[in-house]
Figure 1: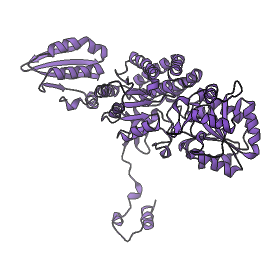
Figure 2: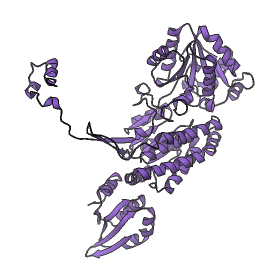
Figure 3: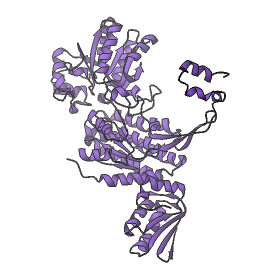
Figure 4: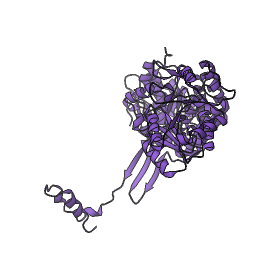
Length: 97
Length: 475
């Protein structure tokens, strides 16, 4: 459901398929644990994601607050998911690519 | 004093829900609506009893009926409505319509119809994928919030977005204003008193408001009088008269006045004398504020008579106050949301029409008017003279105005009153009003332009008739 990939200076969290409420509940602790206090930039890679729930949006908010200094970004969001981030106002906080 | 609410947090949750909602397809949306309708319907009696207990207004049996309207009738009306993606396609005109949600909706809930309005607004918002924030009247907050909670739990069971339904209670005036003017709020569905509706319109957020009613009922001489009287009593006693489209004044021509009076008496109504009217006025009308007294709303005849110190026959269903005029000097000529009606005798058709116009324009512009008649010409004449979004014919106006059961108006607990009532529409508000409709306009050449000399556009000597003639040449 989530795969963590570390490269120099970057921690990438790759998510798969549907990020519904139950999936997010299952992964939230591990994502928070890996991203808390990390010195790296954090990237949420949504290449495989076709649905995001409120729980996933909240997880993005949490990680945004954990990773200070604008070191959080979201990449490979589908057009529909990009629109969701726009509606939720996330694009003003986080780069969405 | 209001309880502290975090407006920013509420709106943040609402925008997240709006984002998630955007991804739902029609089938998923409809599953949520189906589940919420069933949950609301299953709780119709409990919620009705809660509403009467909390507000002290109306009759629980009638509030059950309103809850059925708000769930079953509304569901029947909207269940097949397309509200996601392509909703219409016309290859000839090249126009394709796409439905998009509006965004977070603030739903103001009145004390008179708290649970039914909550259920209704939730259903139409969910059907259109709009998160809703319920803001109930402070005297009806428990029952309205319970209705919202029931709906929310049912929605979540069908994987609705979290926080798609939220509620606030006992908010201060400042917090209400903050909510109303929040930049992320898409729309205010303002069903409530005049001050609140004005606040909604002044907030800078688009708003669909309602106006006050003062419904004239013209019993025209071709009417079936026993039937008309039966229907009026059925309507004005429904929930002790709290519905804003219920009758307020009976207007009859003198030629049939006696027959109408006798029929009202036969069917359980009671005509008040001058002293009794004077005694009842302060029970129902606040002269200082110039409007209804809140604690007089939705009370039975027995309670009103007791408060006024007047005696009426046991079992009296409705009180009629014969009045000589309309306006501030006649407190019972305005909107009274209790089983009390003004009664006017007029010389003839023309006089009756003028009296109906007076009543209509005395606080009820744009709302509803009612006529009992079997003369189509007179029905049309009456209708064209009323400033009313709904003119109900041979129909109890309380039930007829809200649609379902007596006519084919959209079932609704939010009745638009047009510009006369300071509203944008005269429609019965429903899911159709909660969509942004996008139109994809495909190129369709205009054949008249093919042979048109475009230099005529800038030629000042060409007048409108010539221009049109040249445009239509060979066409």
